[in-house]
Image (cartoon, rainbow, N blue to C red):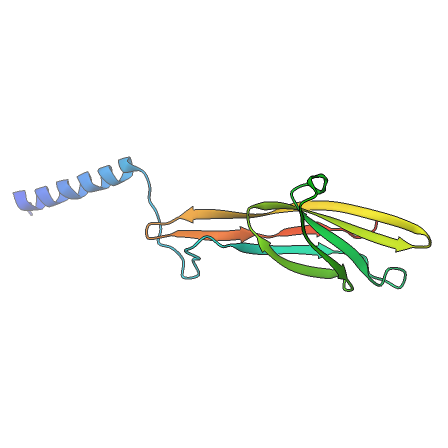
Length: 139
């Protein structure tokens, strides 16, 4: 069977399109259905504390940045082992937990960052949040 010049031209254009597409680089996918298209304002800070009969409640202070900078975000007294806080993204947070008992005070300091990241798709930019987790439990 003979091919016509029109068939050869179609095949040639198809090959050219494939070559240009490969040379141009990015082969982006479409955004998933659960895509968050706007940058989130907040994320979760999970604080773990030792709560037991000796320490039934623990005062904590959450700082923006290192605790030495003394930028207090909030103060709370926790009575459960895990407490969640909704805080602004793209910040590092330090947590100071004060354990008082038997005339002694122990301070546990920990920190982590709530961060955002984005992924580019053909039809959208999708955002995600990585929450922070600090373990202020006694050793």
